[in-house]
Structures are given as C-alpha cells and as structure tokens.
Image (cartoon, rainbow, N blue to C red; front, side):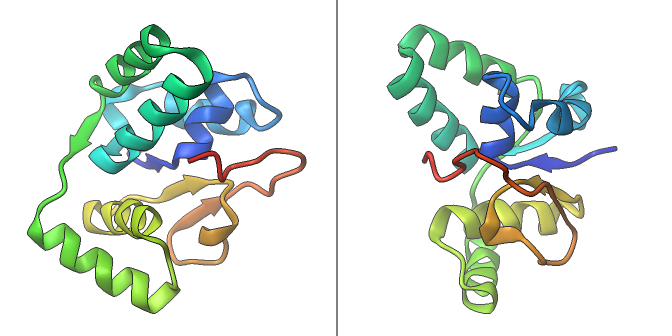
Amino acid sequence: MVCLVDTCGWIEWLTDGVLADSFEPYLKNPAEIVVPTTLQFELYKWSKREKGEVKAMEVIALTEHCRVLSLNTGLALFAVDMALQYRLSFADAIIYASARQSNVPLITADDHFQGLPDVIYFPKKAILCDSK
C-alpha cells in the first residue's frame, strides 16, 4: 500500500520505539512511501541533532529510495488550505497536503492529525512526536 509516514513514525521505526512495530509494515517497501522534502528536512534535523551528521545522511539516503515529493507552488497553496481548515502548522500542513495530493493515507502518531480524513493514527503511549 502506497502511503506517507509522518516524521514521528520514521523516528519510532529508526529508534525501535514503542510504536516501531506499528509503523514497520508501512516502511518496509521504500518504493511505496511518499516522502515530502519537508519530511526530509525534519528527519535530517532530528537525526543530526540526536545521532550526528553521518547517521543523519544515512537516514536521508533511506528516504531517497522512496517517492520524494518536492514542494512546489501548487502544493504550497494546497497546504495553506489544509492549514486553515485543520489548524495545522507549516510543516504539518505540507505533510498532510502531500498525502492528500498524492491520494495516499498519512500514517502517524502525531495528535495534530488525529481524526483527519485519510489518516491512520496510532495513539501514543509514552512517545514524543513533537521532536521536530
């Protein structure tokens, strides 16, 4: 199934977090993962801060095997509509709009997306997704 896994899902999977098993089925086939460049930014920032530059580059290399979706004017304007409609931050709006524009579900444990259309949400137990 083609999908877009949110930043917190990637972090859970990369760190073998408490929800890693929930995200693993969605991350096992890179060719079926949509990765917006905004998500690459968030992953690189988190990885570099937490694990160092070498590990951060390895994480970005993983995402390069996915369907990378660049930010363009149309996506940016659509993200504005999503931000206004659902009260999303810039990055969350870009990520959600990327999923919607690609017609794929967003897989996440981020509370900001809970209850939105076409979102598969895994409730957090003791994880922190706002690590951006």
